[in-house]
Length: 441
Image (tube, rainbow, N blue to C red):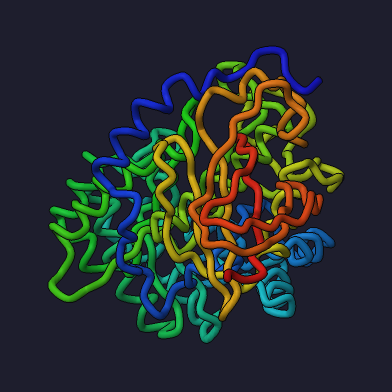
């Protein structure tokens, strides 16, 4: 009932999955590249949301209740400095937002951005003024481990046209990084928040020394019509560039700063509410699998009720805060796997099938789903309960004899399982399911 035209996502999934399974390797996890100053690969440490509000509305309570540990939003230069050298934070709502997040144990990624009619970023004095604004902002909120991001999507015409060249943006980043690191030693400077994983643009920026200035590389890995798993090859290429241009001995993680799936896209292609929920969970799980320590989903709530636009339809709640299935899926994920740390991906023979292993002390769990097209025949409603479809794909999870309990994507505790021999057979669909292991024998 939520869609008139559906994505055909799985028809291409087999080809790219075979390719990245060969390139990346299923059984050999990559080293943990996050570093001690970034979130760990433990759920929900690095799970966040993009928001478009300031102050301390009831939204923050809902966000905290669902288990999110980060929010990302912009601090706009033109709002803060309306008179040269005078910076206003209280009246703009940034003080209240910062305090409200702190009270709820929500970490912040603040984007430093925006025009200011008092200055021209095209000249040196304008960039120095922006760096001064960035320094004052970091000093005001110092000591709380904030991630400071320099601009948003400078490679996109909508946000980057204020700069005459990439060199101007890189010069701005150099000045901001130097001053913010000094003003807030607890914080980290991240950039460049590219639209997509723009490898050519990023390599040029790396050649010009960007990696010498920042602590993490932020990208927005939107997939257009591809499922979340298609990001893996792009991450592999980006990591190769980082390793090539990073200073010796410097570990620079990748941050997924903005990535979501609207229910109505620019070209009017659509997702059901259930498919959006699937992709919400899978974007986070794929980022964990790829050792990306911070995943900030776009976005918290719909900006409008209608319209073929990324903003109006991409929230996990409605504009009035009514939860969508994606919110329920998020709450299920963070509650079911709270404290579990990603270990590795298990090989089940089919690169279209994802089986991720997690551990919490002596406890273990696996999460599994498929990108294959077999379950398309189940219909638009099958995301809610994959076991009801006529055509069901099954998988043998490579687990030692033991027992466990299945939990569905939306939190239904489906049933207890016991298996006496190695391997347990389960129905697998495009909706991730959780198997909480009670022990092996």
